[in-house]
Amino acid sequence: MNKYELLESWTDWILERKLLRFDGVVIGLDSSVSDLNYADDIGAFTADPAPAQAIVNEIPLFSQLLGKKINAVKTKAMDLSIQSDYQLVLHGQEFEKADSFTYLDSIIDLRGSCDSDIQYTINKAQVIFSQLHRHL
Figure (tube, rainbow, N blue to C red):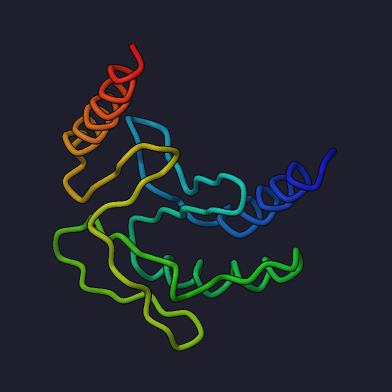
């Protein structure tokens, strides 16, 4: 097992232990998701802001075991609820609120629409085809 696989295994272990008691967000009729992770990027989901702050408080404690530190300045929060006006804080630093983010080259936005993701993919294809055209 190389160091990246080890890091991902430890990240999975931490998330499994810390997010196990949180319900996450319901998807479909009987499923829920509480986190997504890729390498050292983590996305945690909750339907209620109170558990979100608890997650923000606890994950850094376990991340330190791996020699990792959560950078509050680079961390963003996206609130999909209509009425919520909470602010997540880590080490006295408020997380910037995001209207969208890119995860594994897919754009996720507040509307839940895939329009911006489709447009982004079309734009990338146009750039690539224009570069190919010069070489043909």
